[in-house]
Image (cartoon, rainbow over all chains, first blue to last red; front, side, top):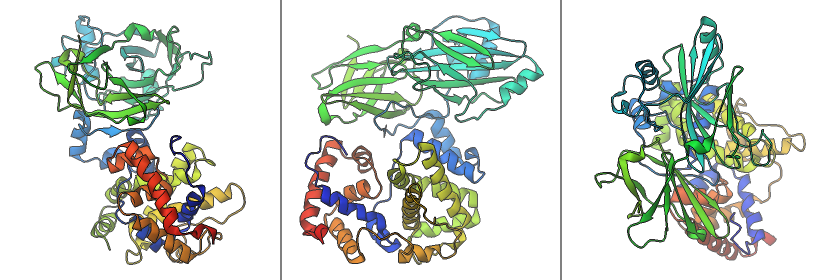
Length: 338
Length: 189
C-alpha cells in the first residue's frame, strides 16, 4: 500500500483478510469479471519458462509463428512495470548501435555470424570487436557496448578454436537466461558481490557450434563508473570502462509542457515528473522525416519514486540507432535537440 | 460453465502441451500473485516460483479430475493456490498437512472448505463480506479484490484497469471507508 494513504482503517483490512478462507463457490463469486492479472514482462517470461519446463515442455515448441514474428519486430503495446530498474528481454532483433569503424573482410565474417544473413543495412555501421582474449581452446570477445546513465547493454561472443573449445562453449548454456559467464562491476560501497550481475540472452545466430553470441543487459545502479567492469568466462577475463560508451541526448519540448526535458539513448528514454501525479506518457520516437515510429516497441516504463519527483525510465524493445530519429514525442508533445 | 473453460479443457485433452501453455498464459498472473502475496514473508522468490510451477504441474497431471460443473478453472486454480499457500505458510511455523491434487477427494474438500484451520470469519459473515464488496460496484470492488485477494499493488492494479495510480489510490481509500460503513460493525461480532 502506498505510504501516502493515510488513516487506513485497520479493522476493515483485517476483515478483508477473511477473503483468504473462501470456498470454491465463494471464490467464483468474488472473481467474477476479473479475468486479467498482468505480470511484468520479465517476471512473465521467467515464470512461464519454468512452468513449462516443469512439464518437460520447451517454450519454443509452443510459440506460434505470429508470436515469433512479433517478438522479432517489437510490440508497440506499452507495458508498465514496477518500481525497480529491470529490462524485459525479447529475442534479440538484429539492431545494434556501436562506435562506427570500417572493418576488414575478416571481421565482416564475424558480423555476419552475429546477425545471420541480414548485414546489408549494417554494412556502414559495423560492430567493432572492442576487446578479445583467448587461450588454446576458445576466444572470448566483447563486441559492442552501449550505455547511458542507467543501463548498459553489450554483446559478448565466444569462439571455439578446438574440439575442446566447442565442448566448452556449448556446455552449461541455457538459451534464455542462464549462462556461465560473470560480470563483475565495482560497486560504490566497494563490495564486489552486490547488485545485478547482468542478464544474458543468446542471439539468434547460435546455430554455429563454433560461435555463440550473447546480449547482456546490465544495470548501473550503485556501480562505481570510475572503475572498470570485468567480464570473466572459463578463466579468461576482460575489462571495459562504461563511461567511454555512454551516450545520451537531452531533448527539450517544442511547446510548453510539464516534462521539462527528456534524455534519450539507444537503450531508452528518461524524464522526471513531480509527485504522485506521475503516469506513463504515450511515447513514440520521431523519425527523421517527421513521422512517428510505429514499429518499435516501447516497453517497460518504470518509475522510481521519492516524496517529490518521479523518474520514469523507459526502454525500447530493441536498441535503436539515434541517427534514425529526430526526437521523441511524449503525450503529443515533440521533444527535440535544441 | 464458461465456454472458454470448455475449450481449454478440450485442448488439454487433445493437445496437452498446447493446452498446458494456454493454461499458463491465462492464469500465470493469478496464481503467481496469490502465491506471492501469501508467501512473500516466509519464502524466497525462487521458492515462490517453484511453488507456482508445482501448482500448474499438479493441475496438468490431474486435469482429467476437474469437474467443470462444480467450478471454473480460474476459480479452482485460485482457491487451490490460496489454500496451498496458506498451508505452506503454516508449515513454516508448525506442522500442517498439505493438500494435493493427487488426492481424489480434493475438489470436494475445496468446495466444502474442509481441512482448513478455523477461519477468521464464519460462513454467514463471509457471504455478507463478499456481497458488500461486490455492492461497491466497478471499479471499486475490483480494486479491493485485486488488492486483498490477489495481492496486487495499487500500481499493478492501475495497469490492469488502465487507470492512473492516483485515481486507484483515491478509489481504494474511498472503497475501504464505504465498505466499513456497509459492514455495520461486522468486524466487532
